[in-house]
Image (cartoon, rainbow, N blue to C red):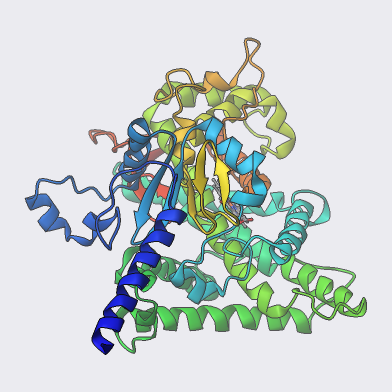
Length: 512
Ligand code: HEM
């Protein structure tokens, strides 16, 4: 009797579970049939050499993965489902759909999923991975306003960017001579300059590119990201307990995390000890002052704490370094591939800025072709092609489908920038598409390299300033060409945390 009742109980439980699952997933967007247990990404669990044997295409360039996601929209429509294990994920494609979800329904589509590996490291604090809600809103508002203050006035970061450029220029000439025709790798120089901008913004200090403290910080951040994205540590997302294993890559990850923590906490302590309320030096000072103001106002449950500040600094380094570096590199990469466009940009800079004046943000409005070129490269390359995953915070009807609460949402920005319904000949490189018949710059809503909606990039203005100043200054001073006899590097990028151009080197010819 006992066995019989147990069987009845188990059968009813399973049926109820299946019924609930069916109810939950009734009328969800269509999509490819998932594999049992592992879902649609099952084939990624098969080692590449076995997949090759099975005749499957194995490609480690992220752009093709993004292309695959975009291609699937042709089969299943612009809103389609995928399963990661038993978790539903909905991919949004094309301009209309993204705008409808992220701009028209922000209360539903602005949360972030709880990804185990990221949650273990960020505790869901900071801004990038924080859940949508009042704490995120207050923290983001404060940081956004502070970032804006760094755009101009006493705390402007423009001199810091220009200082970094002066270093790049000197180094470029030296390295070019050393390379003797083989070409220079621009990536380390641009990475240093961009990282130094984030250092000035957050830590209030620029570092010499060979400074030991600076190198330690960059190495730690770089290693941490490398482990999270490109190592067996990604398995933490499936088996979170792996994080605590006392050996191998998991142990190394925890050590890197500890080192970054000690490094940044020391810096916060130094700031607290030397804080001058009349002369805030950087974002840490501003944040500490906000904490004091909230304490003075008797705010007992304020989320403004040193602990939270620590995660915000980490966020700014992660969100603001790779993205901007790769955007600058992509523009220079396209300039090498399209020398006629490079000539046109230089002619405009020569006419407006001249050969000896330093380009500044005041020139921005007068350089429409240069701006259009930067935008066209950003349109074609989309360094954060799938944005950062969003999550629905309630069950909702969207474009005729039911999307349950807790669904992971992938905004496919890359598909928006290749959407033939909003761009003529979307795959071709044509900066003039951003200009009107009089050569004035056109603002296009369907251009969204920084995302849209409530979670739009918080550093958009800073990133645009860095991009503009770096590109104009470098093209004013140098002409970049491919090394003689080398084939052009492939157009598809390398996908890590962001989409980077494949490794390339350039010969640098001073212009005056
Ligand atoms: C988020 C792009 C530079 C800070 C994002 C998102 C994109 C993006 C696509 C995700 C939007 C979404 O989830 O819907 C870029 C690009 C950059 C850049 C293309 C450079 C060209 C920066 C810089 C900073 C920054 C310089 C700060 C110093 C952030 C933050 C978020 C974010 C904090 C998270 C916003 C939130 O969740 O509320 N960025 N970004 N980004 N970005 Fe950027």
